[in-house]
Length: 94
Image 1 (cartoon, rainbow, N blue to C red):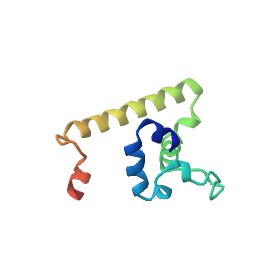
Image 2: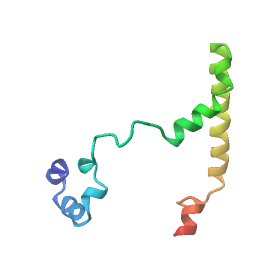
Image 3: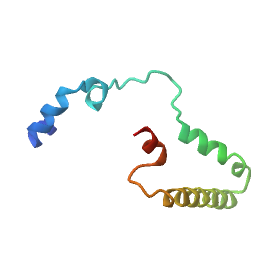
Image 4: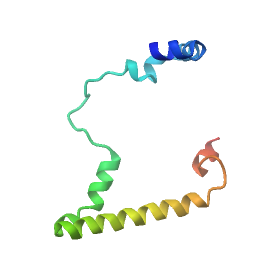
């Protein structure tokens, strides 16, 4: 916040008008709330690589690479159909 204040005082004041403790990293607690450090991305990756882990190393890496490329292509095709600034789900909310 000090760095922001020295860079742009008006932006600093605007941020202080909102509740900084709910959205500013400077106020976040650095202690872990639970011992399990997982997220949906790692769970999803681990699930998709389960079959690959039984393969020899080079085959495993090639299998994971192909899966990743297919996933990227699928998301690219889906994104190319979107012609607005925001995703369709966000546009519905908006």
